[in-house]
Image 1: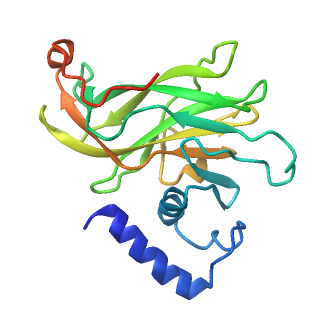
Image 2: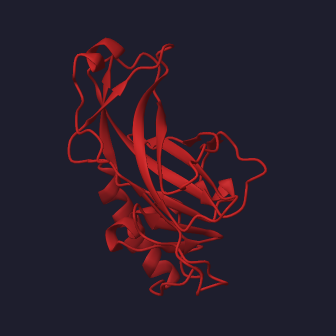
Length: 216
């Protein structure tokens, strides 16, 4: 079953069981993170779950205890309407896509990390290191590294998802593999819709197979 239909169906069942319906975090803490991600994307707004704001890419997150602060927002500036070429890494256990990010409201000392996962079936999130941010802190190009199942052949399309974890203060330690984004201790996660990457050998990529490409 398609992940979006499965999660949407789960959301309906959970709503009946928990009487959810408000926009605050209390109604969403009892639901799964995957359901919260789906609702955030469908409703195009941030949803608080536990201590994490789950936001669609490009939507702003405001601190719950400081509502007058400027919103923190990260846009994953990719065209996701067509599969993106994802060249295999040298050891063949992952493929990598360059991801342009547009950032606003990140305070001095804040951090960004890119998390990725496969979604058919749903796999754990793979979390990268803190990004080196330019002085302007508004535009940065990151790498999204997708861990592949063993012996995944080239010319295969794989469904994936990207989340950018935003920390208003430096994170002391973040696991490299997480079952839930909330386990990272981030303030907000800016999540894309599920999209496809096309596994390509480096040679195929150099010949111009670029898929959807990025929007600068």
